[in-house]
Amino acid sequence: MTDREGALVLADGSVFEGDLFGADVAVATGEVVFNTVLSGYQEVITDPSYAGQIIAFTNPHIGNYGVNAADFESRGTFCRGIVVREVARRHSNFRAEQDLASMLAEHGVPGIAGIDTRRLTRIIRETGALPGAFGTASEADLLAAALAEPGTDGVDLVSQVTTPAAYHVAALDSDCRTRIVAMDFGMKRNITANLARYGAVDVVPAHTSASDIAALEPDGVFLSNGPGDPAMVDFAVDTIRRLVGTVPIFGICLGHQLLGRAIGAGTVKLPFGHHGGNHPVKNLLDGRVEITSQNHNFAVSLDAVGDAATMTHVNLNDGVCEGLRVTGEQAFSVQHHPEANPGPHDSNYLFGQFADMLAGLPDGTDA
Image (cartoon, one colour):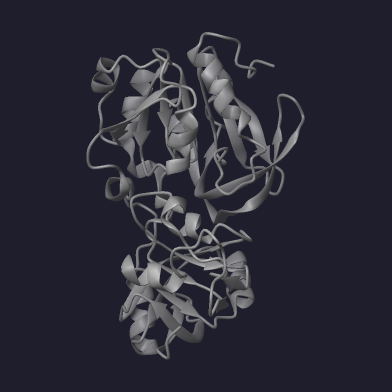
């Protein structure tokens, strides 16, 4: 920790005083969202889906087990900053290689501690996700910066986080000849690790065309998670529309939303989104309730698709569509994260369903 004093100001004029840590930035702006995870703060901070956002952790004590290179979920950090109640003065874990504050400083991510995160969370729950700004600037300047922040609506954030060049990840089984093409809209590393259990993975940039993907002769195509407004990623929607019916498809999070838009579904912005590791989701095909990891502000509305798709999963907190299956095609997706790292792992079976599709076996989604 440092003795740098600062403040967080929301666009509605709410002010929170605190102590700054991490990167030394005069003013940091972004859309403020809250995350309810009890562990996994490093995985959250390094998830590209948080591009354009300031993450407020509801868990009051962050940083107690440090950070390490193995737990990075991407090549760096893309969030605009973090807000916490208290940062651990010292970390303790045999896997730790560094403390959280030092990692944030190294990657240019500012943080503010000493914040009443319960009050902040109540404001966001009542008014929805708000633009905000924090730093050493005056409250008037921070308010002006918050009001000028566009948030995540109408912004193409995918182009900021996708891989700049294609790369290959070998299958864990060297004898496996299955080939998967993964469209990277902001993909987490643990997704790649899960896919590699079932085949070699060619990760391609988000702007890759359907013809270029087909030229790789994949056995299946994966649509990754990613940040922001799916309506701003029409280039990917067009690609997915061309791929549906030609190859098995599996999408997660933003990939779920883009598959939905490709078949004519709408997408809507939720008031404060789903960000946490404890969301109950019901599998409508077998009746099981799964505890899931989630991180998204937008959701799919299937009202306009008629019989073109079936909802396979539903969020028990608010009824949001958590999964869909395209009628008559080998294409399905979920809003939550079955690869969740560090957990929960209730939904990890979905990778197995995709693997069954790749192998031409019944995939278990046709209940």
